[in-house]
Image (cartoon, rainbow over all chains, first blue to last red; front, side, top):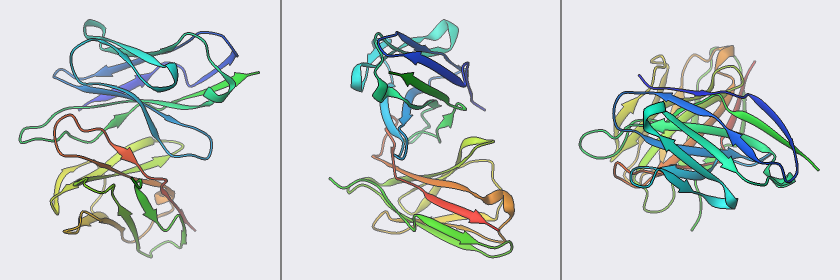
Length: 117
Length: 113
């Protein structure tokens, strides 16, 4: 079974600070990797995804993530955060299954990010 | 394009009752997945339906069930409700294929008293 670990449950930063949220997963095979964000009062939205190819992926709103296979990691980064980035961030993984599709997403516990103006 | 819609948005039930939640996927999406979100356990996968068949299932008791209709709309049912079933139930839809990106609905907030 897969598992996902997010290292920081709560992070507080000032505007313009750089951000890195850690994510490690446990699974021996091919995986798809995702970062989702949940803004206050809104539903989960996809920030970025990795299926294959370039391990550095860029997402919406200036976010990027790097897949390091040897470390089973998929850390999220943003060079300069804004107050509007205050939200809950979830790392997730699933694995392709035979016949098409993929199994259900396994989520980390989430990181609550607060950006102070 | 309209997003994933879920009804009702809020629901209050008492222990022992059963409940049915509904999800309409994005037009053209044939896969529908359900998740439970609680403060303690976080987001947990319940099951996935594709072409009216349950294709994947998470680690939940048999009281949790679902179905999918020919128009890809899906319902999930929880029987004999327990206090611990209080949660936000999220539905997500996706296109078919291994590279599936799941789009989430706003959820149904279920409170069991």
